[in-house]
Image (tube, rainbow, N blue to C red; front, side):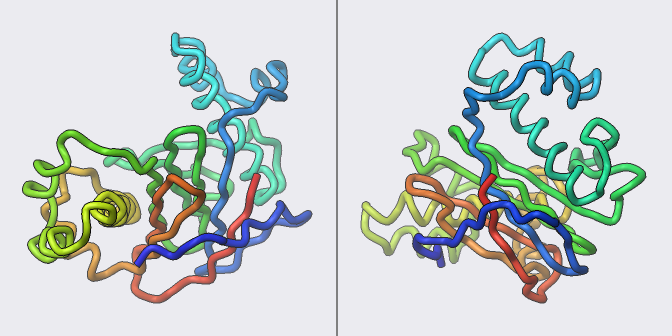
Amino acid sequence: MVFPLPIEWLPPVSSLRLQRGEVHLWRIALKDSNADPMETTRVLNPAERVKSESIRNGVVRQHFTRSRVVTRQLFSRYLRCAPEEIRFGESEEGKPCILGIGSELEFNRSHSGEWLLLAISHGVSVGVDLEVIRARTQMEGIVRRWFTSEEADQLARVSDDDTLLLFHEFWTRKEAVLKAWGVGLSHLSDFPVYAARSWSWNFVPLLGYAACLVVAETRAPKVSCFQY
């Protein structure tokens, strides 16, 4: 079920701490006209700066850069260190992780349109997916190939107005479940197995968007939502 607005998005608190099993979910605007280019250059590591400079599309470059800068700024508050000191890595399947200091924290992020969702947890693996709700030309083919028979039946029973909403509810959950378990979309056929071992929350982060937060265990975590 997709939970309706409003979600209480809290302003950042002065001291960010995570207890084991707790999740902080951040909603971040990617359009930032007040960004300081010098601060961006200082915060990003060399590889991130090269990647940012290689992106020709100005909007895409801005979104990529702000996503990386804000991720570092937030983690610096959790870990009590400078943003540029944080070392990021990837699992074999490409899931981002922290190396060295802060490795006990898990995180996952997803961006769509002009927004980013960043989920940070302690001691539990998380996955998050965000999607602009829009018509997809290949929706029927996606349903036939990747949806379970139960999901396809539910889609067939709802009105035309609700089909798009329900499709995105199902799709964001699939992506978030696989991201929580650290496996790629090639494992979509195994989705029911992973989903049965997960806790998931479909929600509306803002009008026109669908999202899902998942943890890779069945026990419900304490979730706090923040606006950056």
